[in-house]
Image 1: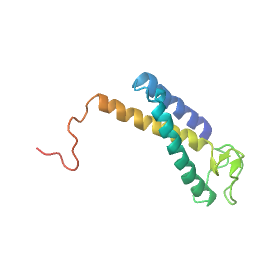
Image 2: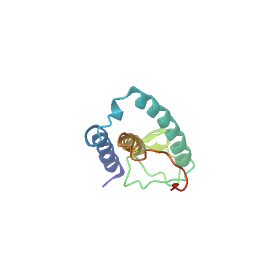
Image 3: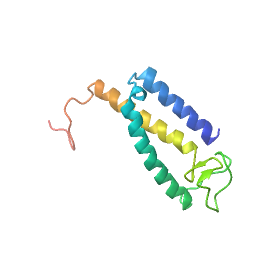
Length: 122
């Protein structure tokens, strides 16, 4: 299975979890999409630095685009957005949606009625 296929599956799982399983409906909120744009901006900066400097390298068989294990990848094009593989956008999106959806769902269930940090008092 390629990196893009796994990324698409994770995105679909995140959308289905948000809308149908947990029913938190985060994806229907304008505030989510505005917040996501901010997170995406910083994801591009982080991924761009890590991949441009070849700190993180990807197997060219698993991602869209060519082999950039020894040379700097292009800024945009050949399956890249700001040096990082386009597949990273899918993984970032699904990670954010899963995290926010689960957070809201747990809050609605009132899992922890009193917030504590450290050891729980008796």
